[in-house]
Image 1 (cartoon, helix red, strand yellow):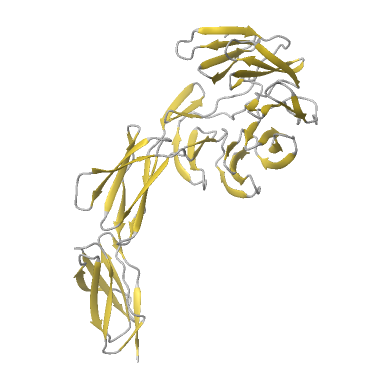
Image 2 (cartoon, one colour):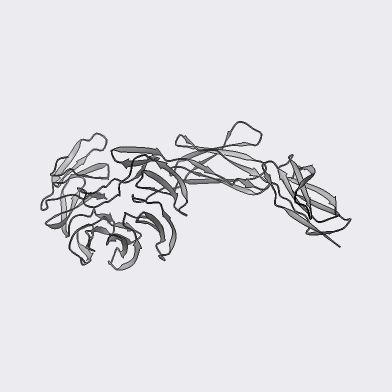
Amino acid sequence: MGGFYNFAGLAYDSGRLFVLNSAGLIRALDPVTGAQQWSRMLRGQWIFDSDPTAHAGVVYVNAGGFDGTLYAVRGSDGALLWTAPSRTGESAPAVDESGVYVNDGCHAIFAYTVAGEPKWATTPSCIGGGGRPPALHSGRLYAREDGKWTNAYDAGTGAFIAQYPGWLAPSLDGDTGYFVLNGALSAYDLATGALRWRSARGYVTAPILANGLLYLGDANGRVYALRAGTGALHWYYDTGTPLEVQEDYSSLLRNHSGLVVAAGRLFVPAGDRLTVLRTPVTTTAPATTTYGATVTVRVHAPARAAVSLYRRPAGVTTYSLWRSLTTDSYGWASTSYTATTDYRFYAVATGIASASVATSIRPTLSGPASALRGTTVRIGGTGVPGRLVALYFRRAGTTTYALRTKVTVNSYGRYVASYVADATYSYYAASGCCTSKVVTTVLSS
């Protein structure tokens, strides 16, 4: 790409790919053919080592050398729209309809309108650089400072709001922020500042949120998918190649490589290798339930994907298409049914089949808490119609259960048995995969 140093920054907007080199030459290319549409040399600075940002037909470039300059270039023809002062030029701009923001280190934040008019700025607290791109979310600007903190400001006024422990680029979604510091990922409530959960596995990459999962990598080359709501491990994969700490300032010196999720795939740059993983399709359902209960089957796949959910009942060897679903913007889809027998399920989305999961009906059992000697005690519960239920009894003072009787569940999913009370008994039911809870009926005088 030319330039004085080995650097190229990329941005995409409105059907154009924008490429910036270290000398300040910016080009617009056709993303399909690579054909150049226009080029412009940005003057006034001597080092361009921050990625450009493209938004709503304008490309924004922050550069340094002689203090800093923020450039706004029209995306359609390369015309220079305006310039404004920054500090070191090390921060890629953050842009939305409210304005353009750069964070050039030492608390030096500059905020401009999209027309280039000053909004607010902070006073630098030190000498030096180290700026990192800020992030915009729900009217707030999140800027990483001091090597360990991410500060939140009101994007309109610059008023300080809150501080979170995080040095890698955060991921922000709804009322939750995900921040990485010293290898630990923490999820915070952005409204209250309360810690929701924390996961420490030595993470070295910024968290990427997609389809309700957070993707991160550690120094040993392992890639993790965590459930965004709880931080629970969804899956992990060992690439076999160490991952470097992801830094996103001074592109000439630091590793910018981070994880990317696109087209149902996870792209993992590590060393001189690129590992591409398919975003897995998973099906979840409760392992057991009771007759007549409502069972929910959930599928996780790429966002807004068509899902074919298959199932087969107990005793049947082939699956049939059960329901067609579409995942939401977080990659989740769900459906429910009333349990009358055991089922096994799997899903297919984007040409990928999930592992199968099974939901089995466990028997229930109930009986009276006490009974008089010589009276008939009726016990019973629910199960799969037509299936045998074995009842095991243990007399008080003994340690082992013995089979007492077997009964068949009727067409309504019920079964009943009885015995004559002559002692205190504990008993349970066994049917299919499972057993019921233990019930005790005490002999009373």
